[in-house]
Length: 496
Image 1 (tube, helix red, strand yellow):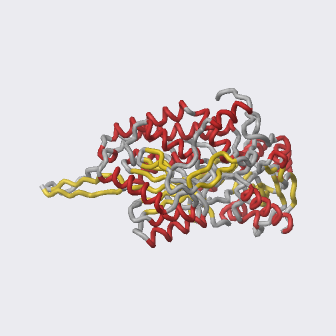
Image 2: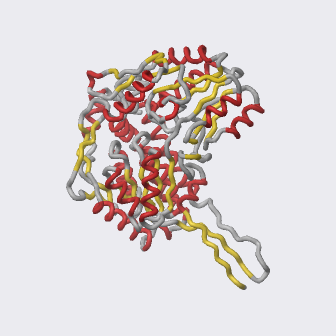
Image 3: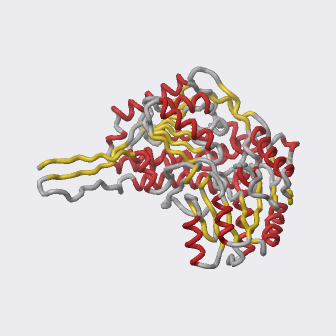
């Protein structure tokens, strides 16, 4: 990462011309002229006047994607050639890594070091993974009667609408866009209205990498207007969404009310993190629990927001996490030394503070944090927060907060721990700390979660799938399994 002063970072930000356009059919398009202000949670300053897209802009983007799919070269390219185009896009993301990290940090508040080292690395690696995978998939020819030939082929599903959140704006966009493009689909991407700028840059870079017009389109705007228009559009064949469970329900309704498009959902979470007394290293378990809830300001659907810890070690673990919370450096996202930046905006900060207030009023014990900080900056900063003496029925234990707020619950035996862990409508992720191999296997199978981490948290790579159970959604991002969302199986039976 380039070593820049704060003034140099801000000067670089002013060089980014991202105001007032969508990226449609391979070009920047102004749309209808309506705009809204993209405000940085770092200091409350306006970064750009962003095009506020509606039905007309979505129609134009979908029409471009439809033409590119029905009559353009992209779905008809040899898979190896599609892969090469994605690899060129990965190279461009790598070349512009510092300025893209700056864009992400400014628009959603995460520390510049995390934006560079984690967000951009993930985006680059995702396009490289699917670029390399594009020509590695094979069709099937099942054995049948001697006078017949059966072929089972995977064919691109068509136009994909991808609606993505603000917490990892490039990572999650890449998880949708890269496999869809590798499969031969065309895409209309709608970023969150809180983080539109990095997605617009992705659209420009895709065109620069040589993707044909209409293959990747980016429309900015809010969910109730632009997102709804994509969900209802009869020419969108597949909808991929990451966000809240409440909005996920809307997309299912949109599909039912339009063309019954397939809808793939990665939704909320209230992930349990179970620490048993035989954890191989309690200090490491506590440190990882603290990192997991405070990383990315706690704005993660997989955040281990429910710490379930055995009563015999609960105070020791909790004290270690409280100590780490007090040491954590909360500050300017553009300072490379910052460990926790700003929440995405004032409205979201208010919602998190509301949950904190409810925790106190319901009788949980506030061990540290719970208040905003750095108010003089104009930014949306919150102190890392830990509650213990949390009852399973409290809002703290039931509702997704999406902020740096940890709820500590205790248990006396393993059956109680598993029951507490599964006592949620969500099923995205879970953690388990134990030295016993049998316990690791048995509890992992008993936990109703799409991912279970044992003696670690948030580990993995692109070879493994990611997604949820229950009201955390369906389908999987990452790995070769993601391609299943963007392809159709066709059977061809040839009588010989």
